[in-house]
Amino acid sequence: MAVRLHLLGIFRKHQPSDPWEIPPDGKTPLSAILEDAGVDPAAGYVLLVNGSRKKKDYIPADGDDIKVMPLVAGG
Image (cartoon, rainbow, N blue to C red; front, top):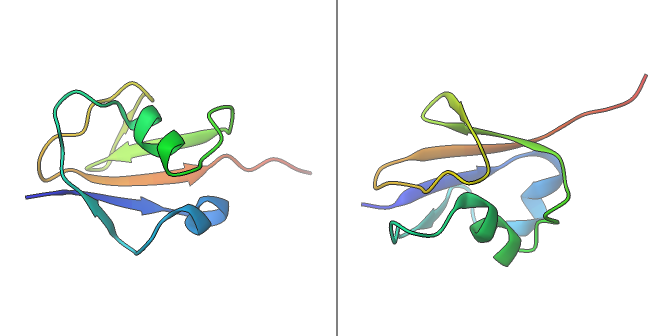
């Protein structure tokens, strides 16, 4: 199986397809995967893994469905 990534909003430009499927290696955190894809490491975003919020150091597992949502600000 693979990990399915959905980059939403302003991050969509960094994914080659939707969903973007990658093989999990069991050691690379999501923050490194996203940085390698071109997402600014200082960018604010929320990670939902299988519907539950996770931190940037989460290591994806086989079959995970991950949504990366940008934080929205304004008034």
